[in-house]
Image (cartoon, each protein chain N blue to C red):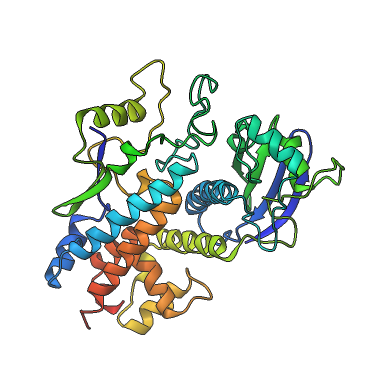
Length: 167
Length: 212
């Protein structure tokens, strides 16, 4: 399964504080904003051959472009898409205060393809990681443009919560 | 942020960028350089993917008909996205410098990059398709804004408990914060603080959060 749990590394102290203000940080609106942004920005990057995962960079080129992709599509950029099926399952869902992001509710075959890309477990297919690996991927697991957008969404939510408290 | 120097050669074609962050502690500067460097590489690749320049005022001329045919036959697209084998784009990178970062192409693809950017002045009879800013140039507005936000978001990490000691009012808090966010409005400072979880925790610890 290629899925990451995305959370912002806010301390328990901060979570406690905002709960005393009558709010929880992640509500439905924020979860939808974050999830939608992750899907859109990831697809945009991937279509340009860039991994959304920090530290990965551009996806490695095909070993034998004449064999694959041949005439099916340009050999560069490598965009993890031929029919578009796998990336059509790139999605998100809220799980409490955490957002799960990745290939979700996909058939077994699609899950396998996603896992092979993400882990590099097959010798004949280079690793082309496009989802952060690990149980708890903070904002820093993504490339700076996505991290910046995550910070902005959380910033707005924090300001919204703080705006309701006066001293 | 400003470009202080450009280099075009067979070993590197780069722009040196001063991020104007020398008022911040070294560890915060290092974090900023890393994130800005990675961001500018990403922004450059995304712009090139759309066959456009990330540099303000620069446009990419269309490919000649002959070269377009040749490029497509080699497996590339018909647009001036600077990509056939992908080697040039794979080589776009950055290095941290004392004042900021050096962004560009290092190594065997540098001459090709200079051919597009025309920093050395050597003539290779191809149109200029500049993807690195020259001296006096800047990136497009959305990229500049993003870099400024990265710097602002990290600046809060320089603030220590001692910097906020004695603060007992909203005015005093913003005066203290203003030292670390120079030339920023209260609203902008508040937004920057809201984006820095370390600083939020500090304000909570000192019971100053409500003054924000």
